Length: 124
Image (tube, rainbow, N blue to C red; front, side):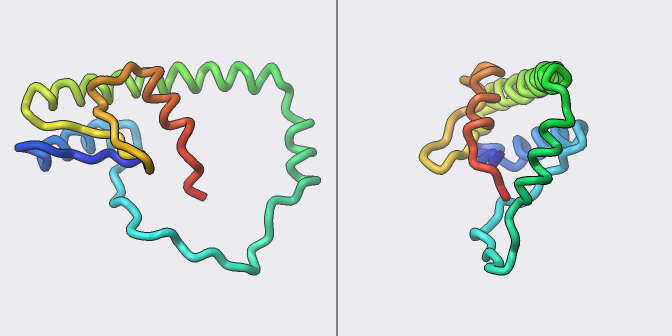
């Protein structure tokens, strides 16, 4: 996820959100400058290994893990949105940067934020 800060005190806004995400164990990283080159000799995923992995994990365990993960991520999304709303009161904006547009985090609900992040293409 890329977050862009704009406004009178964008640097302080960035530090504020960085402190929040660092507390979660996710220190900020600079945005990548360009798409990395792909090695033509890289092999894909072994379908037999993937199939055996999927068969070995009961679906009920996956469903419980997904629900627990969503609850955990929703709490973090709420904290991030609350921080963005505080920053908006201080004349700074935190935006979620997407390929086609950027969205003010302060205007989103936790579920909307999680859905937007889930729609992003994988970084790999």
